[in-house]
Every structure is written in C-alpha cells, then in structure tokens.
Image (cartoon, rainbow, N blue to C red; front, top):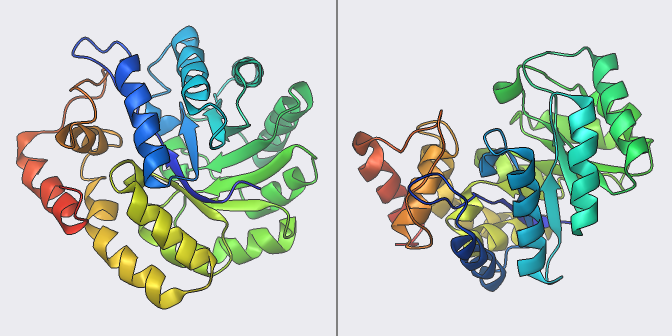
Length: 291
C-alpha cells in the first residue's frame, strides 16, 4: 500500500503553455530530496483537463523516467468517457506507472450504478492498481461510500482519494472496504485529522510548496502522534486555505514560481494569479517557512 504524503504535482509550463520538461525534472528531484512519499503525475492539479492525450501520457512517462523507481508514481488517468479512461490507464501502465488515479466522470453526472460500471470496466480492461477519486466540488458527482464498498471487491481497485472534507467518511469507507483498502484525503485542510482517525495519507496540493513539512505532519499522524502532527499542521494552515484563493492550480503554480522551481506558465481557460492575491499567498508561504 502506498501511504504518506503524495504530491499532486503541478505541470511546469513555459510562457506559451508548452510543457517545461527541464523544470519537471527539477520538481521531481525537489520532492524526492524533501521526503515526498509518492508523486501523482497528471492529476487534476497537473492540468490534465487541458493537455491533449499525447502530452498527458508524455508527462507521465517523463515523471516515471525521472523518478527512476525511487518512489511510487501514480498516474492520473480519469476521464468522463469510459473509453478514454481505459486508454489513458493502459498507456500509463505501458509507461511504467505504479498505479493510476481516476477522477469520477465530470459534468455528465452518472448514477451510482453508472459509476460502478465505469470503474469496473476500467479495472477489468487494465491490470494495474487503481485508486478511485471522489471530488464532488469539482465534478458535480459524489461517489457514495456504498459504491466505493462495492468497487473495493474488485482486486485491482486498491484505494480511494476522498476529497469531500467529510471526516466521517473515513469510518464508513473503512467499515465497508476493510483494512487493506487505502483511504487518502484530497482535502489539505483536514488531512491531519483524516490520518489521525484512520486514513492512509494525503494526495496534497500543499505538498507542492512545503513537501518536507507535509511529509513530517502526515508521518506523525499515521504514527498516532497527535501533538506533533497538529503542531506541524499549524504552520501549514495558511497554505491549506490560501492555495485555493482562486481555482486550483492557479495559486499553487504562482507559489512554485516564487520558490524559483519553474517559470511562469499556465493554460487557458486558467489564468495567472491576480496581483491582489500575491501578498496573501506569500504570507502563507512565510508562515510555512518556505520563503
């Protein structure tokens, strides 16, 4: 089971919006040096919605190659088309990814039975560990614990990223899925408590900016050391809040540029962070002592 602090990696781009592979390699090295436990390449924070299929798969392959087996790589391969999700998942497997993360189909709002059949089809088509991803605030689709429970019976569906921020779901999903099923949070603000009460880790946006602190906080929480986990998390509260002052990944990409780790670049329809937000995000970075 992959556990701990799993960064939802931003995708570096140049001023034209082209993928910046040199900076991508620099980011991979930065995260390994800082103690990040695993990397999600081409998740939604990586702007998967605006890269075409070949670009998407190329970024996954680059991250796998740059990591060189030192930590696990999870490829984002979700789509609102089941056929496309199968294709992306197969290409991620071919690229050498350790697992795949599949966001719930967005916009078309499938029923719970539709969600079950969608994920079942992908799991049966591609033999690679797969993690479900539930983020109704972005997809307008909430996969209920009971559906997650049904899917957990499929051998290569090994976990879920639960990004509702509802802590009571940890207990309900654990009861339905058992101890061998990984439960990750996708909500940075509640990640400390999530892991203290039985979660297995966080797939984190904050970890792009403060990977060492997030790793240390989650490690303490998984060890049951509440006092240490909460004391570290207190330094991260500003980032947890203000990295979402505008739509993710707008603020986090600005912050990564401020740290000198990549150049300024993002793809439409996303735009660069507006100047009135700079000081708010900068103060959160100072609180976390990353600048």
